[in-house]
Image 1 (cartoon, one colour):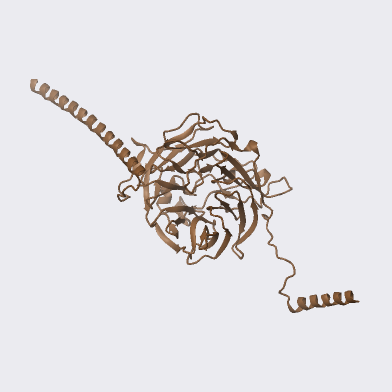
Image 2: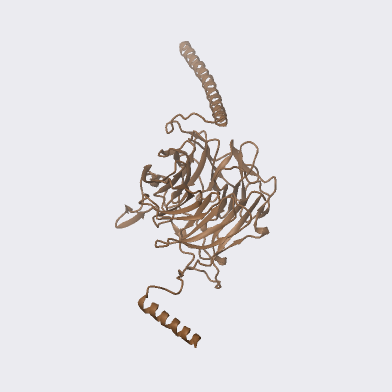
Length: 512
């Protein structure tokens, strides 16, 4: 009797809440997403790169760069700086005498592959220089010390470099002199200096077409800059959320930053790029002290957060509506990571439904471990819904076109009734099986007597702040003085020869 009464009471209560409170849902709401079950898969021993003396530099960078052909890792060396370049398909234990790129006079702080030419890599160093290297097909066979270009313009060490995402031959560098220099590699010199930061630039990120540059700075400010003019469009004073890293979310007109809250907990924040007065959302991650590196995949709208010093990689799905950041899952590993390299989309294994691939640096074991993010699918056909058209390996603009102001919506009339739109949007390509990459243009260094480019007019005289910087400046000046003395001696000898020839001509004229 009691059980019957309880059952009827439950039924009446259910009807009451259903009729009078229809807004209450008795089932939890799940977002329908094709990436809900994405999982991380670490490579086996045969797929790892072992025996690499990874640098122990404490600079907050990845010290790793990867493309479809090569894997580059900054190594620990005595005196100067160097990095390894290994073909991606030659995994396994690396020879201790593997050839290196070793032309820098100070520790290498950042390396980046050219997004349009697989054999070109840029590096920056504590020796205040940026250098461009051309790696031969198949990898290095001996140590490389001669760079294609040596660019000197910063008065202090250079900590960051970034290639323009749609324009060939344009490179950005940020130094500890608080300046960002824009280099035109087709000319071999700087074309612009962005001088709006009052401290060291910590991170640079471009939007999809490269028309906007976002920077985080040690002065606790987040800035959105128009790179061609150097004008600051938006600026935020992040006192409660100390920004360390920033990344553009493709064409969503959003920014994601990682940093530390006022309670010293790691935090991720979402911003509107047109209004940085306050973040859209702030989310606490954990209480660890390691830096959070953000990685964004514009094709799948997935955000990956990897902590320096811990082995976890969290990933979220980003949307323009609430809750904006939808937590999906977490890849766990006991091995701490020093940095992470990311494979471009055209280098992924499409047959295995791989949507992202990391190359994890494990310093304690001298190991580079690939980590693949995979969407589980039963079908063996090409999955077009997870592989939309993506940024390809052809530049949309040349350096001169970008510098002259060509951008989205610029129209050029060609002949009669023919209209070509010159646009900075990236040239897209398909990842479908059978895709053939176009023939890449060879990189041509500007022709000049010396490869070194020294900037005098762009930077004011900033005195060195450490003994090492003072010594490097002293030796550089000594080399310059030695070169000038040699040129002066050669000109004196040439002048004497010309005087003798002139005297001979005069004597011959007098005899006649």
